[in-house]
Length: 439
Image (cartoon, rainbow, N blue to C red; front, side, top):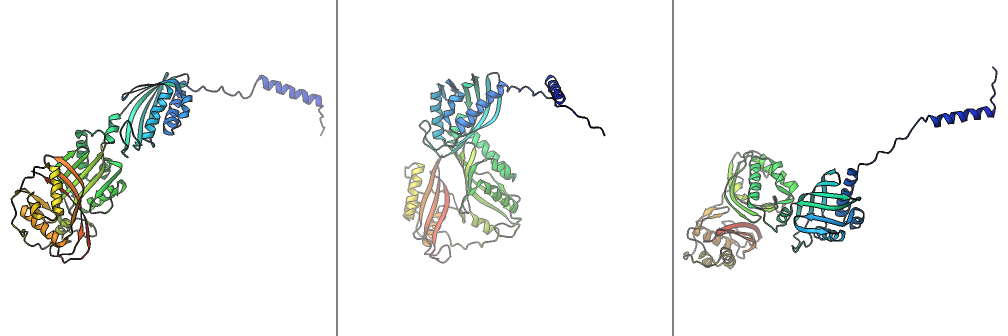
């Protein structure tokens, strides 16, 4: 084979020609960078306003995103003018709600405007415009429109649910029509055994205080509780009854019933139906149930299911001749306070004077009793627990002469109690609530 030699001059010439060709006809031309639309730039400014300025509380970024003559318009205040004035406005709200957090639900930009649809959650932990901290958690929604000029927010218009915030804080009561609608929906879901829909009416931090259970149930346990009830009593239903609504508190005195068709509290199914009285106390925060308290006579249910023997009761006849009722001239609330004081003195003669001659009492687990019956039953109770004392934990004037009193009774069982020998054990019973009409 013949070897071909190339001189350095020839190789250099070839490289020069190749380089010139590449420069004249480049194999790759980098694309020109696509400019970011101004509307996207404006959106990013608003995002920083929400995330950094409000949610993180970094007010120092205001110089980067707020114009010096920033003007803020909203329905609860006159216009706030100037960047420094707006900073003070933000400080006021962040002091009242340290965990305040905005969520951007939607951003729309056109021209020099950005529209934000937002929601906000916060806990009221500091004073807000003269309103002392309530510790309540609230959620509000609103829409804000921002005008951007020279890369900064120059003006903002915000409309939000300020009234809803005050209602959730308990400063302004929620309209009765709204609470009635909430209750109607809850009862419909309860009777339809729709647990998910029931839970939708509860606040996230709601509790269910089912009095027979020592510890109130958090929301995550409420659904499990009702699901087990519906399984044990497939035809469980809540029936209408007497109802009161005072501010954000609803009191419902009514029966519930169901047929025992699956195990409940370790009791095999009996096929028996029970009706039993309920007193439910709904406490609302905004349009959500914050706390539900249920007083129910479990012993009466156990008796009806055959799991507990019917007590043998003596004749309910007072040991003394009942005096005639005597008007006190007191308001319903004051009359209930006085009746409780006479009870705690164990002065049944004076106590019975406060009982209307036609009084109708439902006394668990005895059922309905008249004036003589409730006095006689109270005598028997005092024999069994001679040091009984009833402490009222909450008393509410329900209107039209009705008063709700939640009571804790304490004492020691040192005497016979409805035929049961004394045990010497302390008694601590959450009883009631007594729903009494003073007339």
